[in-house]
Image: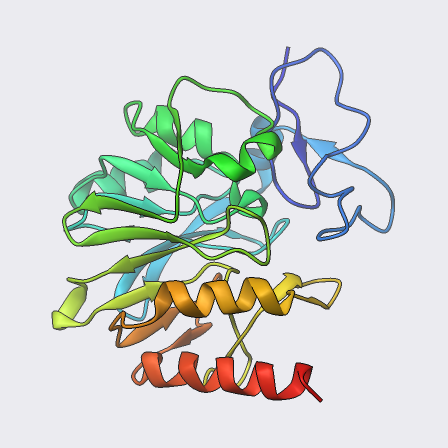
Length: 266
């Protein structure tokens, strides 16, 4: 038995003798099946050819994969909040030891299904910490685990200044993480893909599908706008290395809402 992993999105599946016929996440219109067709690997095979990329991304410690594999997200460690935001497909002893050296984690929070990857493996490696996933995205979970905690509603206070907020549009349960007490006294919005930081790093976009360039519905963007109204944050961290808005994050998001609605109303 093996936990087969999709090569395109990096999602680990329940143990089985044979790989599934298709990855549910990649066969959905928000993602895509690899150009050469559905392909699988295992964590053991991945670990033989790749390593965890461990370095700072601005003011937060990040964990990625090198060379690049599947969706190139990086996880972020919030030491004072005792939290890991997002996960990657590769879990190494080196990465786990470094997270513990930096204060460890008491929980994992995931923004949306494209970043589920090896979340169960990460939880187990970190001692069996709870994984917070929104109930609206439960059907996308491909590897069940007793460590999964499905939260409901629009906000969840995780304590230590960290709050999850549901911001739909990408997935029904897509969420962002607001950290009130970030490094250097700065408040942060960890956006995942719920608000997709643009390449100019001065705006965000609101996408139903990032790789397939499908915009989010206006009603979902208005719901996100309402959910974030009045929330202060200095910086916005996107889904991958360096894709961040450092300074003026609140103003950048507000300007992005205005730009989006001015375009879709034409």
